[in-house]
Image (cartoon, rainbow, N blue to C red; front, side, top):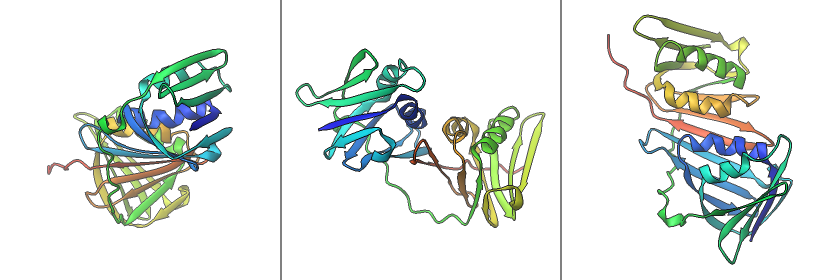
Length: 245
């Protein structure tokens, strides 16, 4: 069985962090909450979502796996007003989700979990540096870089977190010293990343009180943050190969 009640806006925020990479996912449901892992079709970025039972107003579930179309579920959630709860329940007879929003009731068909792309394995990567900043800081920086280029360099130079973007005409450089960050693990790191992916990631991360960016030299970036009552989100994204001038 599975039945839950949650603030619709909180659930939308959590699922929006995933849908930009994959719209068909497998919910791994347990008495402790919901977890999912997904990778984008190009195998460039992964997302890991942990939605604990404490994020819900009411939560009761047995262990099971459900294949979910996030677009369909999102359409139902979009009908909720600000501050309104949504009830989600598994109908054991029809094996469909019953979604209640106020006086509205939706039935959302499920996907066979075995038909969904295999979940990615979390790679074990030891990244030497990290910078912790507010979601607002990160959102502002990525927005600025987007106006200049379609890719960005992120890294740490000793005690400074930096970002560089270079276009055909314009360029941008941002430097944030350790005393203006929430935390910094100093060292040397520098990697080039696609802004298309970062822009989507920051839509969710921008709402977080703090975002941890773990970086290396031409290594993937690991982005960690929490939103809405300890909902944990982790992104991993592969770097682009930086071209020599």
